[in-house]
Length: 97
Image (cartoon, rainbow, N blue to C red):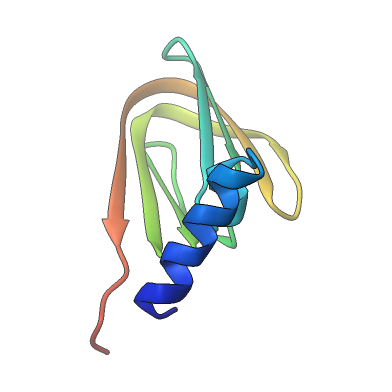
């Protein structure tokens, strides 16, 4: 997406008071303490183990680290994880490869 398209989307989002996560194709992540994490607007589950989950979104990946992680619910663009949450990291998309 070009820079002007990004600026236009940002302006439209602000003008019409639309959620930026939807307009800018960003994931929405909600945590409940350190025991649940709810991710919306993702494009796929890349890796899953009881200590690490990686989720794709349009501009990169989200990496969730924890202990005893498990999938409580999984829909097309929504994911609910439970376990002992330790960190949530945003990894930019790689330009190579």
